Length: 262
Image (cartoon, rainbow, N blue to C red; front, side, top):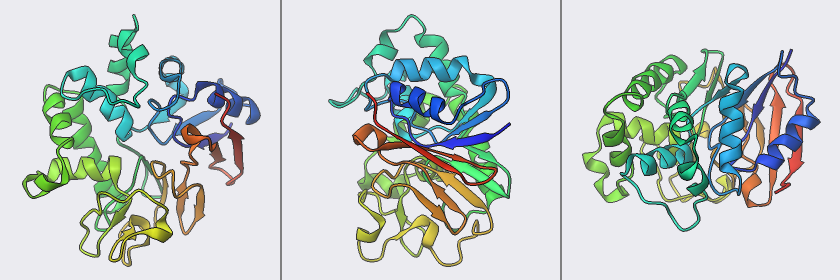
């Protein structure tokens, strides 16, 4: 029995199946942790979502920003973007149950010892605070307030001063890469950590981070690539952009990667 953490799949179904074969995934005993962004960018988002929903009892998958974008489009509070590959899901005969399954995914899973989120945490958050904050947001996303929350999340940076604490927390969990010393997000930067603008640090490098005693498993930051150390495990290795899909066995840290097979 093993637990494998897998980075952002982004609709790369053939690559996912290639990776599962390479790790010799045993669906009767093994568990999979997905860092979110199951869908979009890659060509087979429908197949990935169907596979994940059909293997629900063996996986944990947190919501990523592309998953939230799909839900926003489905709720009618966002439009498809030119590079989106979501149309097959939205036209599928399984659209309703698949989107309901996705909507019920958590934003954070784990314990104070090991935590998985899609993007990251604020330096001021402990693991326990992250889990409780995520639980409140999950309740909104599963209830009648989902559309409003998703619509508000899509506001641009100029409206940041009007953001509620709830929306800001969702933005952190789904989108954070770098932050300033005061905890404010550096919103526009998506490049490698070494090229972060002056005054902006990767969220996991901020001195005094309250979650420093917790191993954080996350994805989202393709330009950062695979990183392992200092109690962080960054797993988005850019599969949808011609990179690799990465899995790490959590019991012993063994890493397995496969190239894009789409």
